[in-house]
Length: 285
Image (cartoon, rainbow, N blue to C red; front, side, top):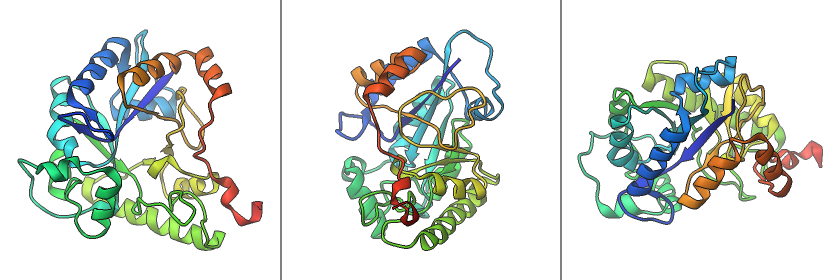
């Protein structure tokens, strides 16, 4: 029985080119609840680590949300809670900031494009992202499991995530920077949640196998990218697939393709997704 891990970022009240709007989110959840057995974060981890598949005849699915957007508090949380669903939230320690729990958020901040929001956060205005008080509140909501997304959510000189592979620095310098980044992220999240995290989400989905091995050595035995595919029980792959969620037609097609082993294999013959950057290492050139 395969497991499809769906990846969201933002859920907004109205159509937006970089988000799922609330009516579409509800329609997608309706479809998933009808056609999948939706796993909790703990069930998802037991499935991947130990091969424990919950009883039932439906294909399994799990929900993940990247970055820690403020709109996840205002729109996604209530919808998930009223349906009794749980999700993993990949929190970037680089967007950490203090503040009180907001009751509203201004429209400009809410609708700010992703790259503009990230640049604004790095410049000292992280209002588009959840603050620590809000993250703590979400931990108590019964909906969210907060997981690691590194510290530096940005691209390097070659246009790929700075955590993925060397991009100008030596392999040794990169390894040192990566380890420091991951351990900083671990300290932040472990202190915030009061538990030792075991799940890591690669920013932009970019990674390399040597980098993934360093992340594993830092304590993360489950890692996710963004190449499309299904997870298998007791999946031993170093980095696992997820399926990005956008418009209805693409979501519906992917939901059908990746819960069927033959269709998934055929998809792999005609589609390639460049997210692994082993070729960036100097000794391999």
